[in-house]
Every structure is written in structure tokens, then in C-alpha cells.
Amino acid sequence: MASTRVSSAASALERAGAAPGYRPRATLSIGSEWRRQASRRRTQLALGFMVLLPVIILIAFQFDRGGDDGDGGGQFSSLIDLATAGGLNFMLFSIFVSASFLLVVVVALFCGDTVASEASWGSLRYLLAVPVPRARLLAVKLVVALAYSGLALLLLAGTALLAGTLRYGWHPLQSTVAAQLDPGTGLLRLLGVLGYLAVVLLVVAGLAFLLSVTTDAALGAVGGAVLLWILSSILDQITALGVLRDFLPTHYSSAWLGLLSTPIQTDDVVKGCISAISYATFFWALAFWRFTRKDVTS
Image 1 (cartoon, helix red, strand yellow):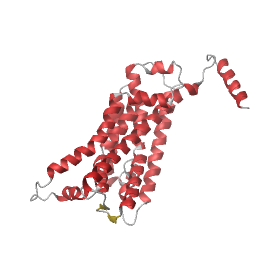
Image 2 (tube, one colour; image 1 turned 90 degrees about the vertical axis):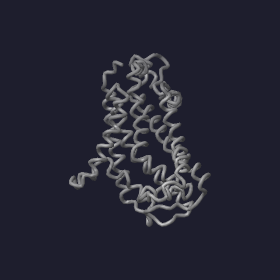
Image 3 (cartoon, rainbow, N blue to C red; image 1 turned 90 degrees about the horizontal axis):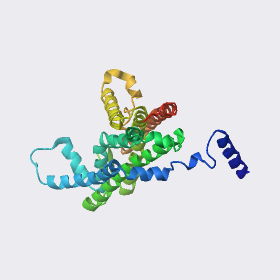
Image 4 (cartoon, rainbow, N blue to C red; image 1 turned 120 degrees about the vertical axis):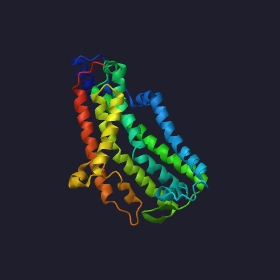
């Protein structure tokens, strides 16, 4: 039965003008695209910085030790005190300072540069001439871009947890929104925070990917996604917009704080997941619709 289906599919391809033995699924595998992206300097630098950032923060804390005691650092000083209370707290601090901008830029870079860079180099039309089906090309590039985005998030959190634990020890998680949590529960809560951030950042991934198939300028796709995310964040601060703020993609971007509270608050987390997945699905569908009908000349 299986051989019959294969032979009939091959016959259909040959009738459509394809060369004998051509298999669309064998073109541009996820593994080959992963290796192509891994060899790029922007991938290496982005992932490297995710590892380097917690180390930089750790060194900065060491230089700051004992200084400015009489100045009263205010709220930020209290955050630093919490960050040095243990490895889990250091991980939480690293996520906190990165979530609003750095992670947005990294996800926009991986998802916004993936197609636009091929077009700017003039290699996109050659990929399609292999021939690689357009929908498959987009699907493979999207999967790899999302995988690298997830890897960047894990590298940041993992490095922060390792460096913080080695320096400050393995202690209960403390925060300003919850009672002290034992290390096991605290780690699970932080993993939940990472999962929620990954879902929220799908909006950035979808928007950057849509812009990537719309323009040949990779910088425009990456910068456009970041600027629109910032614009949404600014609009979300305008209370005069009322209920309209609930429909902004950034409205629930800080709902992960509810995962650290006592008792845990998940209402906004659920709403944020629904909002992010809805926006991302719409952007990706629009990107596939646009690219499969686009006249690729570069």
C-alpha cells in the first residue's frame, strides 16, 4: 500500500513536469538549515551574548559591592539585594532585566533576518530554483528560527542559574510579590516564567517573520518588529485607551509576575497565552499567504 502511494505521488510529480526521482520533502531539511544558520556570525554572536550577559551582571555586582552605601539605591538597590540572595534569584533578575528589550531584539533578529537576508544576498531565488517548495522553505526557516530563539532563552536562564548558584549558593527563591519559595518550587515557578515568556515572544517572532518575507532588507524586518513592539508597550501605558489596551500584544507581557505570587495567579497568564498565540498565528498565516504569491526576483 505504501509503495503504491509513493509511486502514484512520483507519477503525479512527473506529470507536473518534475524530474524523475524528485522529492519535495528531501529538499532543505531542518538539519541543513540549522547548520547553515549556526555558521552565521549573527547567530554565534547572539547566542554568545546570551551566555556572556549573566557573567557581565555578576562581575558588575562584584565591583559594586561595598560602594554607595550611603546613597540609598532605592528600588533598584533592593532588586540587587534580592538578586544576590541565591542562584534562583540571580536567574530571576537576569530574566527581569532582559525580558522587556534584549530578548525581543534577539527573537526579532532570528525570525526577521532569516528570509530577508537570503533575498538581500540574492540567494533566495536560487533556493527556490533547486527547487524547494515555497511553503516548505518558509516552514523550515520558521522552525529553525524559533528553535534558535528558544535556545537563546535557555542559554540566558541556564547560564544565570549556574553562575548565580556557584557564586551565591542554592537558596530559596525570594521576590517582592510572594512569600519565600523553597528551591524546588522556585525552580518550577521560574521554568513556568520561561515558558510564558517563550509564548509571549511568539508575537515578536510572527511579526518579524512577516516583515522578513515582505522586505529584502533584513535590518528593516528586525527593526520594524522591535519598533512596533515598543510602540505597543507605549500605547499600553496610556490608560485613556481603556479596554482597547487589552487587545494590544504587549498588554499581558508582564503577566509572568503572577507565576511568582502567593497564591499563584494564572488568569492573566492564560489570557496572555491566548492573545500571543492568536497574534502569532495571524502573522504567520499572512506571511505564508504573502510569500507563496510573491514574485521573487532576488
